[in-house]
Structure formats: structure tokens, C-alpha cells
Image (cartoon, rainbow, N blue to C red; front, side, top):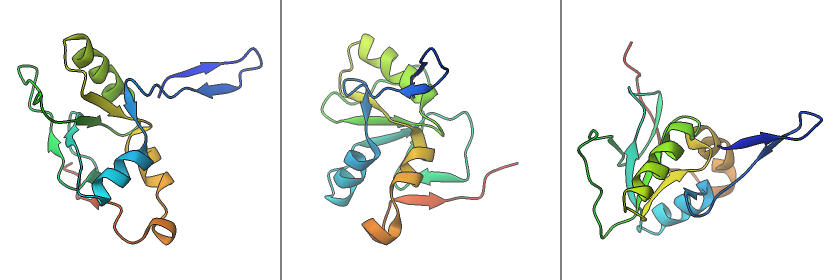
Length: 126
């Protein structure tokens, strides 16, 4: 998540709709069965992931031209860099999950949105 600071050190988080997708939009698309291709760009598995996500295939990978792609990590920083790089290389349908899995989990209270949040708890490898 890009953050800048005011003169008094107050953090200001900025959302860029050209590069990022909000957790709520992603959730809605998954709920409607219109989910994008989900790519986990973390270097190793975490304890939390999204249902149907695949690990980043590597630097030679090209995203499908006919499908939206959402890159994600824990806090959104690596995914945002990846989305910038992919869009600059001509892949405009690649975006990053704003705030990563941390904001996604925080934003989607199962008591509000229902049991299915598309988050999966995994056993992280040591």
C-alpha cells in the first residue's frame, strides 16, 4: 500500500484504481463466481491464502490476455510493484490486491459478509 506522510508524520494511504483492486471488489467478484486469476507473489507460502490462488509461476510467465489477474501478498507492497511492472510491459488487466491479505482479512468480517470469505488458513512450511 503506498503510504505518504504529512508534515506531522500522519500516514496517508493512497488507493490507485488503475493498479489496485479493493478487497470488497475482489470479494464481490469471487462471490458472484466471476473471480480473476489469483496469483500469490510471496516467496513462500503463508498461513493465509485465497481460495483458488496459484503461486507466482516465475519471471517468464505471461498473464492471460483475456482474463483479469490479481496479484497478492501479505501487505500489498510486492504485489503492487509486480502490477506496475506487468502493466508497463503491456498487461493492463493485472492489478494488485490493495492492502494484501492483511487488509482483505480485516475488511471482511464473516458476521457481516457471511461465512464464505474465500480465505483459507494453511499450514505454513517452516
